[in-house]
Image (cartoon, rainbow, N blue to C red; front, side, top):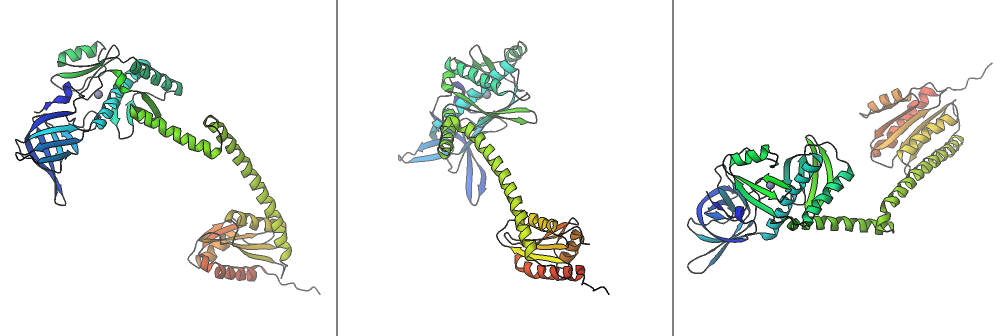
Length: 426
Ligand SMILES: [Zn+2]
């Protein structure tokens, strides 16, 4: 077992140690990943929701040559040994100087202590217990045993947490026996106790929280800096709350501020006026959409009248065939219906070629004995295409380069099907 220096001092950044074991962990494309054990280490292995440290081991040879070994990750095995993973091997017995990536560690300390504090506030104020903690690269989350929490309650939780940060309460680390820990749990002093034998490491936020944990923590709550709650989210076992502490809180606030600034510039208004401006824009869009729809319908009515007048009745049938290259399908569909509603004995064969595939619409007036849906389905099936619709209006997709040819064929069969040559009475 290696001596874990971070248990006693979470702020220890540099240390001296000796390599006691090295193994090849894996090999990909000829490159080995090595795992190194030291007799003592300040590197924190990933556990309890806190990611591992990274950093550098430095070895100096007898000739004075310096070898730097970057540590990519640190893990703990089931026997409790800490392994440092690297691409560069070292020999057993080598004396090394270890340096952990301090900004990364400090960030983890702030998020992890912030989590203890936040979990304690939720437990005290809402009796919501924390069931899991995840420290991510940008934000962290805790999962709580609670239903939805009102926005103002979350604001209150955030305020209390920040008050305790400002009070700069001492954070004390101590170890107790399992029996002592169980006593503290049953008296309600200890928030949670893991299923683990041996001594238990306790983290106390003075007069506020006591919890079992093997992680690295601040010396006093002031070092957490600040705590900002982000959006809560419903999850199967309760509520997931996202939060950021320390520099992350400042970075998140800065990010939001920049976004708001860009939105305000785009709208040429002040930041505080953004919500009202969005509401106004939404209502304008709604009324514009309504106006546009009304105008399209009016236009389709006039357009239909013009098309009906342009096309003469021949053999008791007005067959209106048109291709529209610059009208959207919805308008062409509307126009087909309107033409057939305007004048009797009318069939419309319209093609909209604005998109690929093109679309054909067939409509007929009520006095025409034709089921448009059935007719179009059968006509397109002959070309291996699909279409259909109601007796009054049908549509189907066509390849654009075949649209004209198919429409000509369909028009010809409609004419032969529906024409009634005029027979003079005697
Ligand atoms: Zn913890």
